[in-house]
View 1: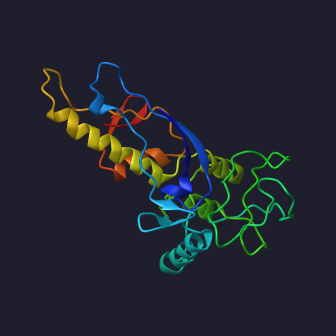
View 2 (view 1 turned 120 degrees about the horizontal axis):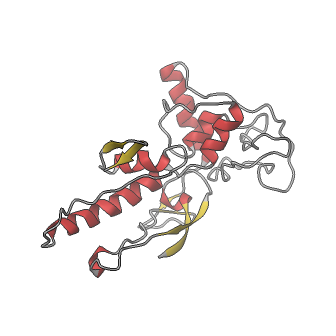
Length: 219
C-alpha cells in the first residue's frame, strides 16, 4: 500500500511530504493487513481534525526548554547567511505555518542548507531543526555541524514513527488472538532509520529494545 503522507497532518510541525510504502506477508489473513495511520491534523481543521502545528509553537517550546534546562545539546546554528531566493531553503519562513521541509542536501558549497528562522536574522539551529522532527530535547547528534544537520534532515519524524508503531501494536494484538502453533510474537527489526526517529517513535508506541551483534533492534 503506497500513500503520499503529509507529516504536518500527523501533528509534526513541519511541511514534510514523503511516499510511504507498507507491505504485508501474503500468507497472513486480511485482518492483519498493514494500513496507513489516519490524519489527525489539517490546514482546514474541523470537529474531527486539529489545526496543523505552526513553527512558532514549536520554537516557543525550544525557548522554554532553554530556560528550564539552561542549555541544550546541538543548539548551534549554521552561519550560512540568510538571503531570500525563490527555491527551497531560501524562502521566508512563515511563523503561522509549519516549518518548511528540513533538508539534508547541500547549500552549493559543501554544507547543508538550514531553514531560515522566522525572524529572518539567522538559520535554525540543529536543536531547533531536530525539534521539528520531534526528537527529545536531550537527544544528541554526533559529528561535525553539517553532519548533524544532515542526520536530522534524513530522519523520520518521531511522532509519525509512533503512529506507525501503534498501528503495528494493534495488528500484534490481533495476531496473538489467532490460533497458531508458532510463536505469535511479531519481531520488528530496525535495519535503517536515519538518526533514530523511527526507533524512538516505535519505543513510544510500546516496542521494547533488544540487541543483535550488529547493533540495536526493536523487538
